[in-house]
Length: 154
Image 1 (cartoon, one colour):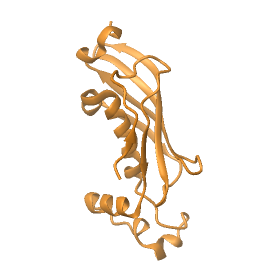
Image 2 (spheres, rainbow, N blue to C red):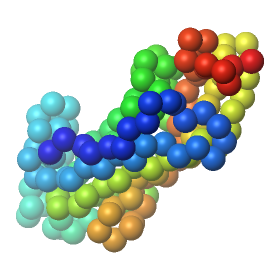
Image 3 (cartoon, rainbow, N blue to C red):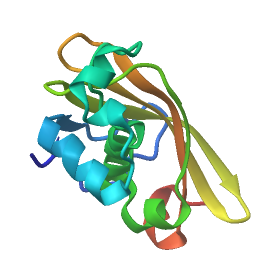
Image 4 (cartoon, helix red, strand yellow):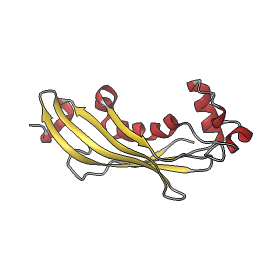
């Protein structure tokens, strides 16, 4: 299933601006496709019997699969600037299970003008829409190029 997202024509750049949310359903097919693409064949991600014996109690999605939702949200917010200068600092706080619907949210927390340009830092998180459990928390920063700084560039 493709992720759903709100879209905004201007990059969020002022402190307090919300990022457009990104939402994705986690299915066994999504997990299997990620496993095939990544080569991460840990049985925790596909073997029900094995996964039941772990602290998670069942098959879970790959952490990087859940983190991709943050990257998608940042790409939609900052485009090429995110792809060329994006930086993540996150903590994995929970697991995503097949059947979960995850939602990535964020907001601009800081703006800093440097010699390389305007650096925008956002607080980001991923939560399960079913039980509101935090899956990922952290921050994402991006350096805006002069062409995308617009009128807020100094």
